[in-house]
Image (cartoon, rainbow, N blue to C red; front, side, top):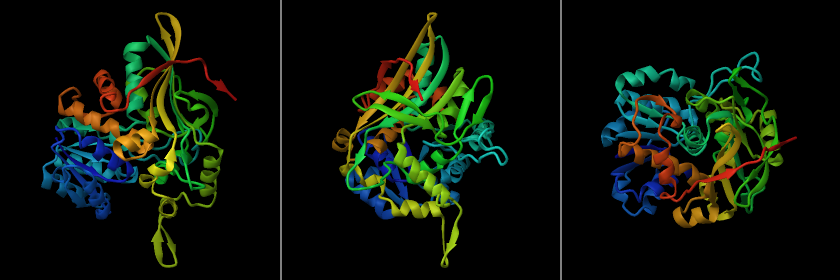
Amino acid sequence: MKILLVGVGGVGEAIARIASSQPWVEQLVLADLNLARAIEIQNKLADPKRFPVESLNASEQGSIESLAEKYQVDLIMNSVDPLFNVPIFEAAYQTGRMYMDMAMTLSEPHPEDPFNQTGIKLGDYQFERDAAWKKKGLLALVGMGVEPGMADVFARYARDHLFDEIEEIGIRDGANLIVEGYEFAPSFSIWTTIEECLNPPVIWEQARGWYTTTPFSEPELFDFPDGIGQVEVVNVEHEEVLLVPRWIKAGRVTFKYGLGDKFIQVLKTLHLLGLDRKEKIDVKGVHVAPRDMVAACLPDPAYLGDKMSGKTCAGTWVKGKKDGRLKEIYLYQVADNAECMRKWGTQAVVAQTAFSPVIAWDLIEHGQWKGSGVLGPEAFDPDPFMDKMAEYGFPFGIREMRPVSNH
């Protein structure tokens, strides 16, 4: 398989490192606006010829198309902020390549009632083009990271094997990670973090469909495994809520993330000051988006690994019935930062995000996942993915759960 990797930030580097040990990855083109960064990653890999580097502006659809043709790639992998999804998605369609991303096209809040009604939802742009992709016989696999991605595979696995009826599916993400030497240092793209945390969170209910609520609503304590312990999690806008109900019957679907009071206060302050805005403003003759400025002021998550300690947990909590009895489980994956640094030289959050797309490439390459159109991870057999997780160094766990305590 030949792949064009658009973006070699923290997650892009982790994808390249994990993929480098797979002989069926014939070529992985490392394309980034920052050519020096791409060369830096290439120099870390054992066989640089398999990993050519290119300078690429992800907003330029024509440039993406040119690189796809130049290298005759089979798949275009989107590993940049979702702001650039449309040109990458369209470049794949126009050149007849498979497409994959880890975050779907962006939402827009409802203009009159943003905290009750949805406006443009995450992924709407892509799903509206499903018929066109099917007509071409092309696959666009959207939301194929860890959350969304692995968490959606877990939801499908629970439906297929663990439950007869599902009352609720809740993605729950928590960590005990510490970054030494910084008062505030997000472990993932701050651009994406601002987007998903300050937009109105979406909830799915079978009787109501998709609706929104206020940011950071419905706090609950969730007990995470592997020594992480209880973490307060809150509603956050995330793709799983838009993906899971398309393929899996459930009474309710939510996504809750453990942010912490300090992180929430920083995000609220950024919003209050208008520093979360994506639109460019004039600053003494220089046009810059406030959010881009915030990102430039913070440490790059790709270079925080040696300053981080602790673990991060991503997983899917499912409540329902099996054989007439109430059942509640948490399917999860825990990544330890020290182990990720030792194995791949990348920090835990980006490493955990990166392994799922590589497994998905593997399953597509070897004919275990097939399809056309715009599809989420739930559309595929979860078993071969789950079977490969330990092989790739990211084993899953299953915990029988007691009901979480709300407050």
